[in-house]
Image (cartoon, rainbow, N blue to C red; front, side, top):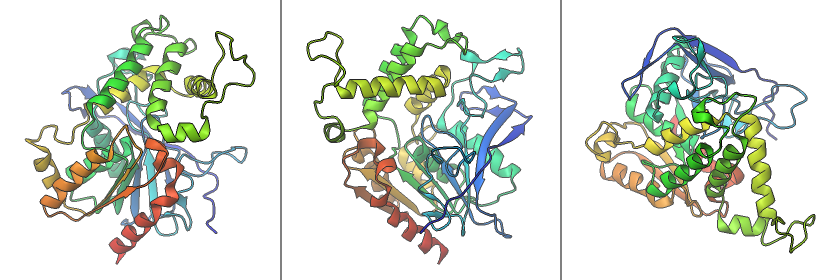
Length: 371
C-alpha cells in the first residue's frame, strides 16, 4: 500500500529582477510559491515538475497540518509508491504567476505605486508562466527535468516547457490539454467574464478584497464548472432530482444540479480572487502553441523529447480531436510520441476523477525513460 507524504510546507522564492512578458511589458519583482516532495538525488537529475490547472495552486500533495481533512489536489498521484513515486523522484509544483495563491498576481503590490496591481497587472500568456517557473528551477540549481506533467492548463505548460527548453526537458505528459484554445472555450470564458463585469461590486477591478463581486464570480465559476462536467456525469450524479427542501411549484425552487452549482460557486468566492480568475482565463484564451512561430509544425519541431498525451472521450472543453491534431503533427515530424484516448464519462474532470484509467501508462512511460 502506498504511503502518504505527510506534512508539507509551501515555500516562496523572491526575484528582484524583471521578467519580460510576451506582451513586451516587464513584470517585477516576482514571487513564486512552490512545494517539493521527495529528495533530489546527488546528480540533481530526478526532478519531475507538476503543473497545475486554471485555479489550482502549489499544494499538490500532502497536508499543511494534521487537522487538514484533505491532501493536495493531486495527492493520489504523488508520494512513496505512487504514480509520481517520491522514493524515486523529486517532485516540484509551483503556483503560476497571475494567481492569488502565493505567486505574483493582480492582488500583489505594484512596487512602482505601493498599491495592488488590480487591472494594471499585465496580460499574461502561458509561456510567461513557464518562463517564471524556469527562474525557480535556476534558483534551485536544477539543470534537467525528468518529466513535466500537468492536466488542462497544466498540459499547456508542459507543452511550452518541452518546446522552449528542449535542452532541459527529458519528457512531457500533457493530460486533457490542447495546442490552441477553441472558439467554444473562448466563448464560455467570455460568458464568465461578463458575469463578473456586470456585477456592480466589481468596480472595474478596484473592489475591496473584503467586498468582492461575489455574485458575478460565483456565476462565472458555475459557467466554467459546467464545462468541466459532461451530460452523462450530470445524469449519473443529479439526474432530474428536485431539491427535497423546495416545493415543486415554488418559483425559486431548484433542481439538485442548480443547488450544486450555487454551492460550488459560493465556495469558490471564498478561496479565489476575482481578478486572478479573469487574468488566468485570458491566458487560457490566448494559448496557441504556434504563437511567434510560423505554424504549429514549426513549434512542435522544437520538441526533441518523448511525449505522452491523454484525451478523454467525454471532454467537450478540450475535445480529443484537438489533442489528436497535435499528436498527428508530431507523428509526421517523426517525433517520439504516444497517445491514449481514455473512455470516461466525467468530461474534462476525468483526469482528476478517474486517474486509475490512465496512470498505469504514465508509470510505464517513466520506467522506459529510466531504462
